Length: 169
Image (cartoon, rainbow, N blue to C red; front, side):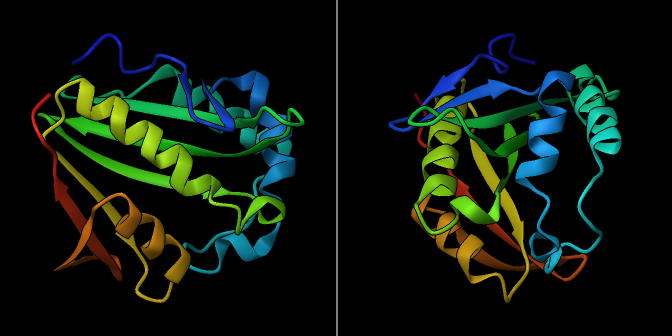
């Protein structure tokens, strides 16, 4: 496992900050639109549920063979917390996920944040990245394509596995 995985990251417009319970209320508000769950199911988390989730994510994986990285996205222009990116790293391979709240969608923030995370993972020696995306979630498919991921024939829980092999640093 790499000790630098959880470093704060920066992109052109965003600060990517390691997630913590202190982000829960803002994150719950940013992700309160039920439409965000159209492809993943469930419902928006209450602030209390989000606090428990943030604490669990910040504590890291209980499996010593994998490492979790979770960052909230803070828009520097106005300080708004707009969503999050996350990764699970196991044996040099990383799975990525991204969520941007409805008010900030369509601005390229998910792509920008995911690119910053991908560059970080590449620098740390990650060799393969994947993402699981619902076949009808065209916005997430555009993010994956922008990162250089390609759909594979594999599916999991109704989602298509996207994958890319990364260059060695």
